[in-house]
Amino acid sequence: MLQPTSCYPLRRKPVQGYPADAVGRYPLMLHHTSEELRASLAAAPHLSMVRPDRLLGQQRGRLQVVLLTEDWYAAHQAAVHLATLECLERGEYTPGELTALSAPAVARWGTEPWRDAAGLILPGEAPELPQQLQDLLWDPSWRETGLFLTVFWESVDWVWLEDLQFLYGFRLCRVMAPDTAYLCRVMADLAADLELDLREVDVPRVVERLRQCRGRRFCESDLEALLLWCIQRQDVLSSPLRTAELLYRFDRPWQERR
Image 1: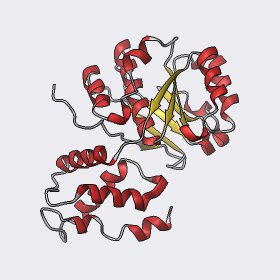
Image 2: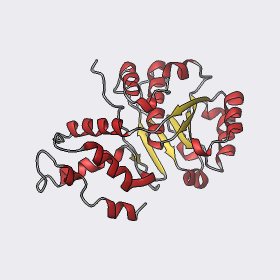
Image 3: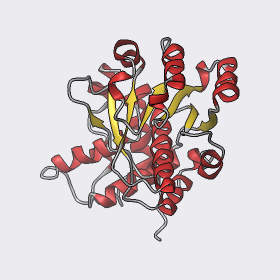
């Protein structure tokens, strides 16, 4: 098996009739083996505390995990990997998806519309979530649905987390934020897949500039968006690419939307 150099990227799908930033779905990675998924997690240093064997081996029934995170994209990556591994270990190969809801989506629509999902990714800081969570935990019809709560480190309620672990069997998992060295690796992998030549690009500078421009909204998928933008402009860009071409005026439009 060829060892991946970075964690498998997510493919977020919009849900018709709902805002894309409020509700999204991630297909399970059932085309990968368990060994490949474990290697994918191991390739990301910031996901080193995501230990599938411990989390899957100690669960009570369905998979219920609190992802104590510094980065929402990394937390969703961990959730999709864990949910897929659980399906593979159970011998369930029917295509499924995880549904990710924002705090406003939980407040407006609750969780009832997503009963067909293989699992839910819910924001732990949503003020309506405690009652929603109790409904899910006590409703027998939800017993086969995996639950992943994303809780940001700076807003954690430790008493609530202890209750989730002790009373309901949630497992706690720490997810860090990726550093620049790892993001450079991701960008190199994406560029190779897209057949873009980066040998003359100062990749760390490009990554840091992109993080600065995007601010709190930055995530790994921005790297792919930047490279796809390059493909759209290949007729006016050089090959190999140059650093200046990847820094092209992103500061003005993106900073206006922060």
